Length: 222
Ligand code: ADP
Ligand code: C5P
Ligand code: MG
Image 1: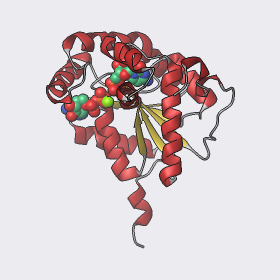
Image 2: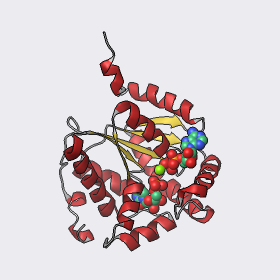
Image 3: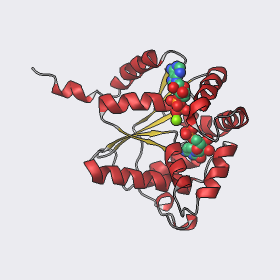
Image 4: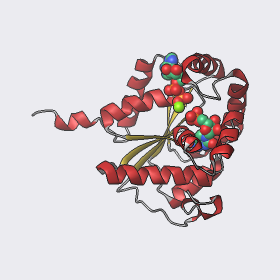
């Protein structure tokens, strides 16, 4: 990727895709709320392309020769939000790659937007989202899940110090995004405290109201 000031995606003034052609659903929730888990279910049943902003940032961090690697590493460890230009460019590149590879035009964008500037810039310059799927979960439950995940994840931020910082960033920086979308009637809120199966059942019912249906339904024989 080019230098940060030359990343084009965040500076355009009109979207490159139209929402009639490209569907984007943002997936938000605190760290450990179960976003990745539920996105995997949705990929299987609905044919979405799943793009996790955190995964894309970790990939870029580990890419040999990346000029953003060290910066990303610091932000992730501190649980703070990487400058939006980088994340939006990574998302745009991944969307284009998926469209070129298999023509997929339905995206779950997981863990993004985590800050109001990201929300505004993405919808202005890439495509407006259809709605936001918000997984609501209290910190004590998320903390247990993350510490458990940390036993095997190998993630630099699944430790109690980073987790506390991530919770703070979530409350101070990311919740305002959810609140703004909520005030626009664009949030589907799901109670994420239950079992993964119960949460998924609720997700399916709620997104149906937005016209999002499993792909296999289209092929049920008459
Ligand atoms: P996120 O992407 O929101 O950070 P993950 O999907 O990675 O969250 O889930 C965090 C951890 O909690 C993982 O170890 C996952 O297996 C587990 N997990 C996910 N959903 C649930 C759930 N509903 N109940 C219990 N554990 C869960
Ligand atoms: O979503 P995930 O937990 O994988 O994100 C890990 C980290 O990546 C965040 O704590 C944050 O430092 C960074 N991130 C970001 N901007 C995003 C998503 C993730 O800076 N939109
Ligand atoms: Mg995740």
